[in-house]
Length: 307
Image (cartoon, rainbow, N blue to C red; front, side, top):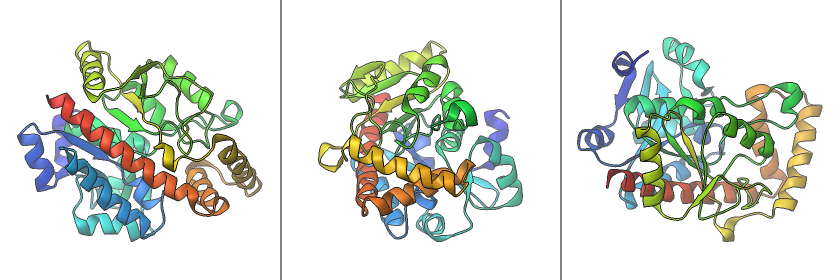
């Protein structure tokens, strides 16, 4: 499907339509974090505040989701509420678009799906929590997130707090390297691990200013080097969890998921919920803090791209 054919499936809010028409900076946002990543009412509070942070930093938010057979680029208040409260929301990645659109079901976009929607709409920057990746024991299960293959060929920069720490971060970085996806450390030399600022792994390059990131992205795409980029932005220090502590919690949650035979797209929501329980809610507070920080940095980069 080319962009012209795809446009018949896209619906824009007036705010996003105006931003596109007037070449204003836009930041894409996902809906899986609302429907599957956080409980109610924290999810809707987070969704509203993230959009406001982006506006406060000079850009326009475009929360993306599938609803009534359309790819919504920007959601109104009623639609946001639906993603936050409807228990029937499906989790959508690249493979799921045809089914969700043709069935008219409500679908929340993952990192991969949000990148697709953003690219179809002409949006170059996307803020999320953490990307998916190679799962632990992925060498035997072959459980590798479609986020990684999307990053290999879709021209959207993803601002994130690294990869979710429930993953095999070393193998995730190897996969990105193989597919030529730059991993930029934003004001850091070490790749962050979502809840923690450190992971034991480095980044490809360190950049400290939005204008530097924007310049690198523009040169990448002008050279025809298709694919996205990771802008790894560590969770603020005051909200970060200790790497060793969260690692032991994750291992316990992984063992429980294995014992209960939880597999596929159900793994991540189970682990995030269990980690929240095991940390007494601290992991959710960290998750929210890092999303706000990513939204701020993404908006600054989007503004710099339009400068």
